[in-house]
Image (tube, rainbow, N blue to C red; front, side, top):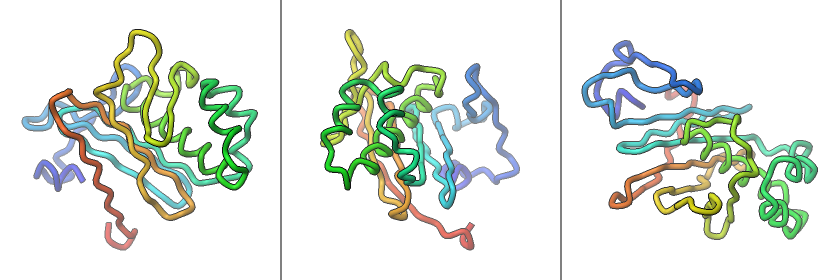
Length: 178
């Protein structure tokens, strides 16, 4: 993905970690405005690339046993817990993973990772929006749930300067095509 976007062969890439362990591209001409992020779960790997901003991606396999309301009550913001409680039972598991992956993608984009409290911000889903709390401006953040296999949920978070547009493009590859 980086080779395709920036034109350097794979063996030329060098990576570093920030203070929170988030990988980035080591200084290389033309790469300083490019951010990337990776996520994987059983059966799916996701990668995200952004020019001129931060990006985070998370993918999870839909697992009814992990979509427990008690987990949401312990970690999600109260508004998100209510969003789950109000969901029809048939939609609750997918809604749980949509929220979970949005939260992880956002934290990965910020570089905070799961060290930040998951209940310190809240998402709505239709449309996807984030509430960062008093005094915080979410206007430069963009989010998407992107289509996957039907067994997975994938979310992307991107931070962009206010005057730039954000476009999410999903591309699938089969393992044989890698």
